[in-house]
Amino acid sequence: MVKKSFPLSRVYQLLEPGPVVMVSTCRDGKPNIMTMSWHMMIDFMSPLVGCVISEENYSFKIVKQTGECVINIPTVELIQTVVDVGNTTGSKIDKFATFHLTPKKALCIDVPLIEECYANLECKVIDMKIAAQYNIFILQVLKAWKTISKKRQRTIHHAGKGNFIIDGKMIKLPSKKK
Amino acid sequence: MVKKSFPLSRVYQLLEPGPVVMVSTCRDGKPNIMTMSWHMMIDFMSPLVGCVISEENYSFKIVKQTGECVINIPTVELIQTVVDVGNTTGSKIDKFATFHLTPKKALCIDVPLIEECYANLECKVIDMKIAAQYNIFILQVLKAWKTISKKRQRTIHHAGKGNFIIDGKMIKLPSKKK
Image (cartoon, rainbow over all chains, first blue to last red; front, side, top):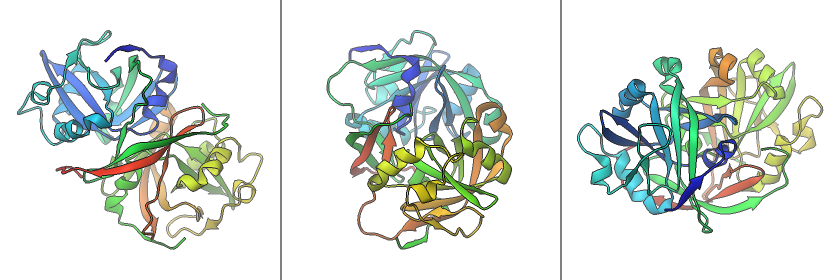
C-alpha cells in the first residue's frame, strides 16, 4: 500500500467514526498486536487519543513499559484477521508471522506499523496515571499515515460477540463543526 | 417509540461501534442537548463510559454541577437534528422545543431522555478529576432503554466536517470475545 503522511490536525476524522483498530507494540525486539474497540479522540491538535487496554491483555504491560504503540486502522478486507488477532494472545504466538501481517518501520517510535492497514498512527503514552484506575491510556499521535487511494476505505465497527457493522453510505451535511 | 429496559451488561453493544450520540442534561428545570462523538466504553459491568465534553460546551458546566446526563443514541432518520443540535448552543435556545424533540422522564435521574432516539442510557458522573485536565468525564450507566423493533436501527458515525457514515452491512464472525 502506498501511504503518505496525513496531517495531525485531521487524525480525528480517522478515529471519530469508531472503527475497530489493531494496536501494535514492541518490547525487546518482539512485536505484538491486539484488537481494540474502546478508544476516543480527546483533543484535535496535537491529537490526543484515550484508549482502554485491559490489564488482562498481554499488551497492557508492554505499553506500560515502553510507552509506545501504533494504532493501525484496518478495512473490511482484514475482518477475519481482526478477529483472529483478538482471539489469540501474544504470550503464545508471534501475531505478525501467524497472521501474515507485514511489519513496517515507523518514523518516530520503535514499534512496527501494520503495512496492510489503510492508516497508521504512531503514538506515545503521555499519561499512565489514569491507567492505574481505569486502564485508560492517554496517547499523543506523533505521526499519521494514510493510504493513497481513490477507492473509499470501509472500516468496521464491533457491535459485540463477533457482530461487525461495515461502513455504509456516506452523507455530507452543512455543519459548522470540525 | 415503544422501549424496553435493556440489560446493563449489553450496553457496550450500543456504544462500542462508535455512533454519534446526543447528550441531554438538565439544570434548574431547564433541559439541554449537545451532540457528541468522543466517547468510549471503559468497563462492561457495571457499564462505565468515558466521554469528552469540552469546557467550551454549554453542557460542560451543567454536567459538572449536576453530575447527571443521558446518552441518547439517534438513528439515521434524525441526522439533520443531530447536526442542528451540534451547531447551536443551549445558552441561547431551548433545543427540545426548537428541534421538536420530546423529553421523556428518566427512571434514575432528573434529566429527560430524548424520546425520538432509539436507545437511551441514564448516566451519573462517578469521576470528575480527569475532566480538570482532559475534559474526560467517567460515567456510570444506571439504566438503559432500547426500542422494541424488528427493523434494524442504523446509527451514524461522524467523520469530520459534516461527513457522516451510515451503518452498512452487518457481518457475524465466530469470536471468543464479548
